[in-house]
Length: 278
Image (cartoon, helix red, strand yellow):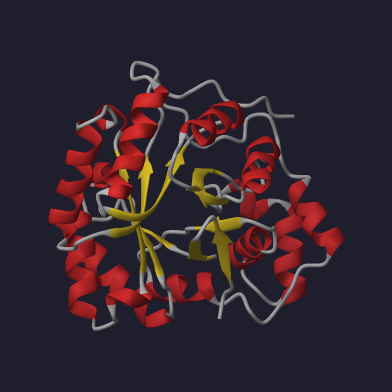
């Protein structure tokens, strides 16, 4: 069984199941496959427009709600005080739940004071809408500010992270303050990453597929959680089958050395000022 990451009171399975951009029966079926395979961590967001399907999948599967760590996120346009709490409640209505395990601010918003949005996030936790709270897409300086402003524990920063993108600055802040860093797009949309000799050769040597090598690289790092997505039952099962091998220190380093300046997979117009990357 994949280990869990402890982060300021949250106990988070190190491999979760990402649901973007699935909808409808594809989403429900994929979540059922994930729960069958042993995933205990499901990730969604208001912006994904699939919270109803996520809630239906959890309710219809048969696994106990208490066995599942569920994350959702508030869209960056809705993080003003009042708007954030309403968005969180709307998410719960769509999910058919009383609370989520983790509520995140999906992106920072330069037009809304950080103190206001973090205050609203903390208030959502006090109101019982979420057991734990965090942020997403926060660079290191903004994350430091958010932690300083919060009067409830910040547990997670969910960011773009994979071997093509060095996130040492963010990861350092997370480790210094006891947060988990959750990697979305953890296999960098596959493609070129799987063609890199460091990945391809290790997959052959270990008798694993390339995604398993990359995901094992993630979860062997302290404080790191990964949330791969797949709609294929076979790949869903493979992505969590990581317990029967390890990467040596030099193998971890070979993968980390793949980082490059153009490695970021997502950078919309509302992005914050990212940390410099080598």
